[in-house]
Every structure is written in structure tokens, then in C-alpha cells.
Image: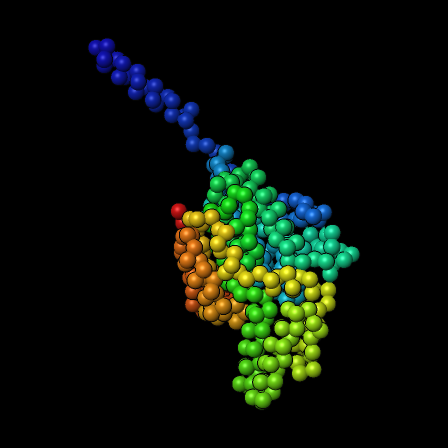
Length: 342
């Protein structure tokens, strides 16, 4: 009889204890403004925290934009309103990954900051320091797990992500390099210009002889910039001449310091076991898949984990395809899921 009563009491206790062990409340998804200071500049960003249990620590990714005046959402004034980074943040949020994206120097609320009166002193290392400060800000958020930080960079931002991957503490658990700048800057510029000149020749706008002369002038201009000599623009079309003149003007310091980085050389510093995704779009005319060959080979030699390089059929530089001009292409979403899956 005693055993029977004890069993009944235990059963009742288990039933009455259930409400006390209720599931922790869910905190709804939300965005909040994040502000941090680096090198005397106040930098503004958006932290997106997906729905989570109260007190839960989440995986979190720092998002890094591409070159030029590209803001936290992946847009450039009057040039591009793709919202590419904002859409990447949404996609990662769907996979329960918190994200921080920010207005780098020269964009959004941040502006030029401490470089306002002397923009010619703004170099590429300043952008890397700003990204490092953003990584530390993300690390210290109450919702993020510092042992599960990720870096997701697009274009030039991917190269910045590689540099962070080998230097920040704690080292990121994963790097996603989306359509990355994978060769030296001026080599990439020359490749793009040669492709445009070849297309102009194909369309009959230039003769083969004119193409040869312009191609040689482009290569000579790159050599002159690297040797810190004046560029001879005599044989360059006006638009190309203006580009190289700008490279010698207020942006000279940035161009020289960016061009000094050869991305495959940065791989050796990554933490062994780092998960790395590298995407390249077959319709990307700015960063063709072929430019990622050396970086892909360096990643294969390194003690890092896949998925490695993932070609994206029909995808352009802004992560769209012909059927999805205003949203991330399905191939991009699939690649991101492969990157975030445990």
C-alpha cells in the first residue's frame, strides 16, 4: 500500500511541477542601432537579432560591404540600391544567426568622420581597423556567443574578412567570402578594363590595333602606379584616363595600400578548422570566377573546412540572377545555408 501511495504522490508531483519548468519566453526578432568609436570616428550600424529564447546566446555574423561608398545595406548613392547586405542579414536571420552591418567610412550616418578634412589620408588599413572594432562590438553584445562568431564579406569586404580572420580574438568560427576580391586591386581593375575594351572591339567601336594600344597603355598605367610614377594617359580613352587620374589623386593612398594585399597570402593565418565558403557567380563580370583560382587553391592547402568554393550559376556580382533581379538568387541562399548549417 505504501509503495502504491508513493507512486501516486510522485506522479502528482511531476504533474504539478510542470508549470514551474515552463519553456523560457521567446524574445521577438528586432533591429537596433549600434554605435561605436574607432580612430576618433563614430560609426553607426544595425544589429539584427532573430527570435530567440530569453538568455540564449546566438551565433552572430559581421557583414562587410564591397568597395566604394557602399553603406550598411549594400547600397551606393545614385549607383546601386540592391540592398544586398540587408538581404543577406535577412537570410541569416532566418537561420537564427544575429548580424551586425555598419556604415563604413564615407557612407551613411558615419560619413568620413575623423578624415572629413583630410580624406587623402584615408587608407585601406583604416577600413580594416573599423571592421575589427565592429567585430569586437558584435562579440560583446549580450545576445551573441563569442565562441560562434562569423564574418561574411562581399567583394572587397571579403578580403577585409580574410584579414580579420587571421588577426581578431577570438578567431571567427567561419568566413563567407561572397564574390571576393581575390587578387590584387590593380590587377583586378586591369582585368575589368581589358574585358571592356575587348567587348568594345567586338562591337566594332574599336579596331584591333586600337585595342592593342589601349591594352598596353592600361598595363603601363598599372606599372606606373605601383612604382609611384605619374601615369601617361595619352593612349587611354577619356573615361579610363579619368579613372587612373583619380587613382593618383585623393584616393592614391587607399589604392596603394589596398593593392599591396594579395588575398591568397592571408589564408595561412586562419585558425585551423575555420569553416570557409567562397562563392563566385558565373555572370559576375566584376569578379569572374577565374580570379578566385589562386585563393581557392590556397584554401585547399590550408587546414580549414569546407564548403570551399561554390560556383553560382547565372548569378551576378550583386547576388542576383535573371529570374530574381530584386532578391537574393536561390543559389546564394542555398550557399549561405550550407555555410550556417551545423
